[in-house]
Length: 323
Ligand SMILES: [Zn+2]
Image (cartoon, rainbow, N blue to C red; front, side, top):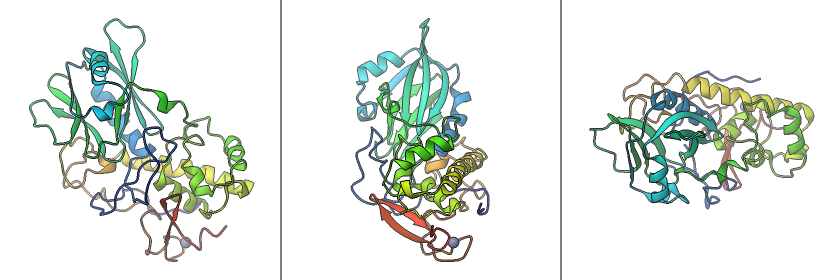
């Protein structure tokens, strides 16, 4: 296994590139029209956010619902949304792929209702003191008494909805027990797609996007263009391990970042959804190849290349990833 420097973080938010849309297999998103460079939250970022928000929301009651952008609720109407949420109590927050699943209980209702959140490209979710002015792009605001839960999204590709259909077609969680080497190998055997493109298929494994697909292939030493069905058994095992490793590493790393800041600092893109301004070097690069074209490979020094596959950027080392 190759290893780069451990921790810390990633793509600064000051990138001039446009963020990508999610793959076509994601119900909420249309297929990408052009190549975009990240940073868009993937499984680890959502997991970190869920761990941060869960204890803050537990047991809190929604006292007021304000919808500033009805688009983010679609297809749920503002009326249905408000009715379902007003007076409901948060009784759990979990993650499935890149979705946040909020469990809400209304009165004596036996079964909690699920509210699905997705950060899209630029979404952020955080608590803000109720007397603080709302950000310009607050899409939905849930008053919890002294604090507001804010879903802010400058581009409105995110979602906060009662519609659960997006969850139906998701494949196994890559860090869960259902994602076995055998199952992975069988799925790859049926696909002629380039392995990098196949890894973005949310029905194969849920929650991996452009960043971690590139990173996992690098770690496994596999060429991103290799057709999925041509991976040898040893390569499948290596890739399976690498996927789990890059994701776990990113979750562990993101979990050390303080997320108790809700402001508009330059540093609060993506992962940090609000890490404090002036916080120590959380932005030191951690990724091995992603967004590093033109820089030396951390393993062999060869210049890292970028290529476009299925309208999305792939970063790889032509020497380490020949196979
Ligand atoms: Zn290399």
